[in-house]
View (cartoon, rainbow, N blue to C red):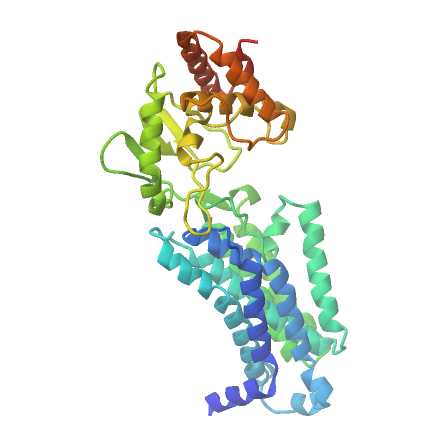
Length: 437
C-alpha cells in the first residue's frame, strides 16, 4: 500500500524529472578531463563544490513542486484531512527529497567508478563530503517545498534560485575566510589532493542542514501562522549548535598522513612518491635515476628523489642529499612536466625546487627561471634549449649558456654547483651566481 502511494506520487509529480536534471547538471559541472581519475578525494570535493549551482536549482525545484496544491485549487481540501500535517505531506516530501538526493548522488557514480579503477589509495572518510552534500540537497528540496506552499507564485522558484545564489556570492566576496562560509551549501575548503576534511566541519554542516530540512518539512506541513513561526525554530537551534561545532575556517582541511606516506621503488638510487601517486611510480623511476646519475657530477650531489606533498608555490626546506619532486598527473594518469621530459624537469635548477620570488612577481621570476633552465641544459650537455620560454626569458637562457660555456670546464662546474647551493636556500640571485654578473 505504501509503495503504491509513493509510486502514484512519483507519477503525478515532476520530482523524477527534477532528479534526472540534477544528475545531468552534476555530471556536466564536475566533469574535468584534466583531473586525474585516481584523485579520489579531489573527485568527491569537486562534486561537492558543484553545489554552488546545484543547491539553488534544488531549492527552486522544491518551490515549484510546493505550489502544486495551490495550482490545482485543492489546498483547503488537503489541509482539512484528519491526518497530522507532517504525515499528510510525507509522500510528496519523501519523493521530492529522494529524487533530488538520488540525482545528486547519481551524478558522482561515473567519477567514483573511474577513480575506483585508477586509484590504489582510497582515503578514509571520502564519503563524508558526499553525505553532507546529499543532506544539503535534501534540505534545499524540503525548504523549497515549504516556501513554495507559503508563497505559491510562479516567481517564487526563480527568485529563490537567484536569491540564494546571490547571498552566497556576497558572502564569498565579503567573508571569504569567515565562519559564515561554512554555513554555505558548497564550501568545504579544498586544501589539495593530499588533504582530508576535518570531522568537526562535517558534523557542523550535518547539524545545520538537518535543521534546515526540519524547518522546510514543518513549514510545508504548517497550516496556521503559529505553526509557520514555530517551523523556524529548528533552524535557529541548528545554527547555534553548528556554530559551536565548526572549526575555524582555516582548519576545515588537514593533511592526510596516509595519503602522503612514501612508497619507494625497488633498487637504488632511492626514488619515492606519495601513496596517493603510487600508480605513477613506474613512470618516474628511470628518468629520476638518470637525472641522479647526471647530477652526480656535482660536489655533494643528491642521492635520492622524493615527492613532496605540497601545493604549488608553498615553501619547503630542501635537503642537500635529496631532489624534492612535485608530481602532478594528467587526466590519463601520465606525469605532467614543465619541461620536455621528466628528466629535464628534475635537472631544472640542478635538481632543486623553484623558489625565491613571490608567485605574482613576474619580473622577479624571469632571471630565476632563466638561470634554472640554463643550469639544467648545461647538465644535459646542451648549448641551447627549446623555444619554450617567453621573452625575455628565452634570450636570458641563451646568454647564460653562452657565458657559461666560455669558461674553463672546472669553472663551469663550480658555477652550476654554486647555483644549486643558492637555489637550495631559495636565493633570488641565481642568474648572477651562474653568470658571475
